[in-house]
Image 1 (tube, rainbow, N blue to C red):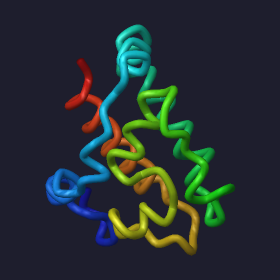
Image 2 (cartoon, one colour; image 1 turned 30 degrees about the horizontal axis):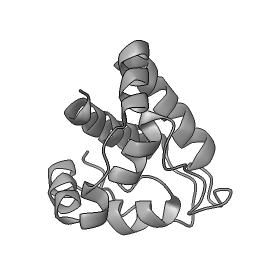
Image 3 (cartoon, rainbow, N blue to C red; image 1 turned 180 degrees about the horizontal axis):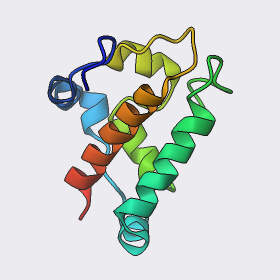
Image 4 (cartoon, rainbow, N blue to C red; image 1 turned 90 degrees about the horizontal axis):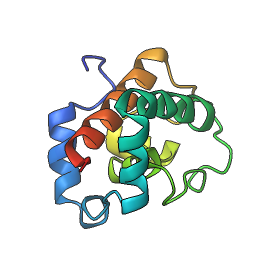
Amino acid sequence: MSQLNMRDVDELFAALGRSGFRSRFRLGKQEAEYLNAKGLDVIIEHARDFVAKRLADTQAANDGRQTPMKSHPVFIAQHATATCCRKCLAKWHHIPMNRPLTESEIDYVVAVLKRWLVKNVS
């Protein structure tokens, strides 16, 4: 992604791989089966919806606690890629907390989630 404030995706994934916390996330059997049953395109639609509803606002509801740790492949991917809350988006992705996400930032977050899901699907 070329927007100045967002992090290079290759650099991001290298840094995530060095994080003990971020690199421990894996799809569980339930999440992998759900992804395989629904297909990647549907799961990416879910990702876009989750990002738009849970992260896009300046003051995300329950920031830091709005993304569950299980039950959906996107939730696992969000924790693995530090796209789970606005604080993590600021720290890991250089996306400021004090304003709503732009469409290009939402596209970036969804692309990051897709990359992780593709890499981690069984």
